[in-house]
Image (cartoon, rainbow, N blue to C red; front, side):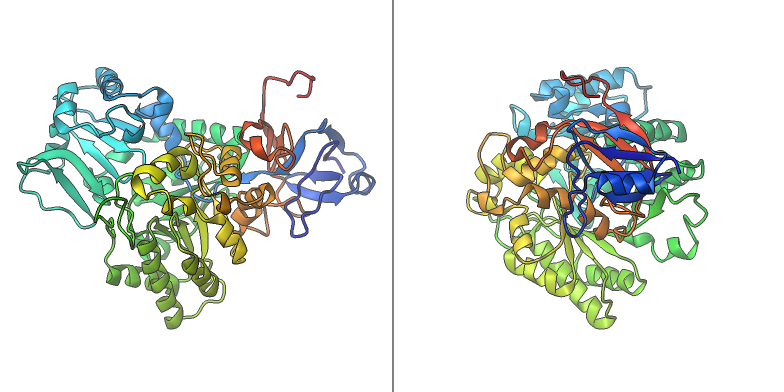
Amino acid sequence: MTGTIFTGGPILSMDAADTRPEAVGICGDRILAVGGLSNVRQALPEASIHDLHGRTLIPAFIDPHGHFPDSAIVSLLRADLSPGAGSRCLSDVLARLAAKAGETAPGDWVMGAGFDETQLTERRMPTRDELDAVSNIHPIWVLHTSGHCGVANSMAMARQGIDGSSADPDGGRYLRDASGRLTGGIEGLSAMGAMGDTHFLIDDASFAKCFAAARDEYLAQGVTLAQNSWTALPLLELFQKVALKGDPGIDLILLPVAEIEPGLSRDGFGRDWPDGAIRLGPRKLLTDGSFQMRTAFLTAPYLGTQVHGLPYLDRDTLFAETRKLHRLGFQIHCHCNGDAASDMFLDAVAAAQADRPRPDHRHTIIHGQVMRRDQIRRCADLGVTISFFPAHVWYWGDQHHETILGPDRAQDISPTAWASAEGLRFTIHNDASVTPTRPLKLIDTTVNRRTRGGRILGPDQRISPLAALRAHTIDAAWQVFREDERGSLEPGKLADLAILEDNPLARPDTIGAIEICETWRHGRQVYRRHAAPADGRA
């Protein structure tokens, strides 16, 4: 029996006993044997040896919450306005939009993405008038990095039928200046809805190109299972075309938006997709907004204000949608940034459970950034799990400390230590493209709680490197009912592996600097770092 045996370096299995085997043997797309080298050799006598040369073998990372392939859509099809692309002031932003307009046919949309005013000199969004100065022959829509607000120019608003007489839509608002004139700013759920389908003005060819680019990015970061966590019908149809072509080279879980059920399931959508690489997963609900825009729904107001944010759904609608999905047997992933939003969803789950008990539903709070400890205890009682967003500590932790929540509340954003102490199983995510898919950087932030400005934010919420690794591997598999097939190095599971240049358990202070050397998916090497280290290790 042929195959490959990995040995010669630390192996972190992520199994229940935290086994550290000497060797792992794979054959075909599965792990066949794990344990001592002699025993694995006996199980695979004809296998080749893949010498780790001291590097560390782990199960491949699993993305517990993200928006694949948005990172490639931004880089290939939009004007990238993110700080990482060089935007330091509004003039940089406007210049990038002008360049995009210059290569876009008159009348076609110019879309900017990744905008983060907290990293700009002016600390504000552009205005409608500033976007009009960029172009009055293109509709322009600038989407904030949070995905929860944006700014449109006059042509874009006219194209979508928005004018001074337009009433604020449910779950959002049109921003106005002191005279009542529209500024072009749109906040709340309407930021995704008021612009119609502009976020998905993508044809089959461009989507396939973005899919391939995002796949390569994720594999280079050791991720073999990704998510698209807000999959409306137009996007589902694009994914279907990819799925019907065969193996896409990465595994995906799609989270259909709640309102298209039960019709989606009744029509049998996705049942004819081959090989299972792309599957439908939990259904998605959204209760509130973002912290940067002060639309996350809080029980106590934002620092120095009387603003509590706002719910995107009224309580009755949230209860009805939760009950519907729960009765249909679906797992629910619900976006809850603020603690008031989490209260609403936990109340809705409790009501759904009282209506029709399910012993292992694994309904999930997504983000849970300011969850109180009593809420975490309640999650444990209700069987609700959490996917935290610790990347906020690095990217916006200083803003949380100084202007959003204040120094006291900011200490406990993404309270992973509380969850660990309460025995709650949880995951951690990057929410790409809000923050880039960089698992080791995310783990580093979860372990060390270091902000971009260098402060340690919430030292009491730090967890161990092993716990953080589990939150991105086996616990991420468990959270979406995939723990029997992936997430740990155990016989019978998919041979999805990542090889790291060093052991994260041995260098907890610098985990984010560790490189991914190789990624294996379904027993095949799908990524290999081109540059070899100085000691000659490949």
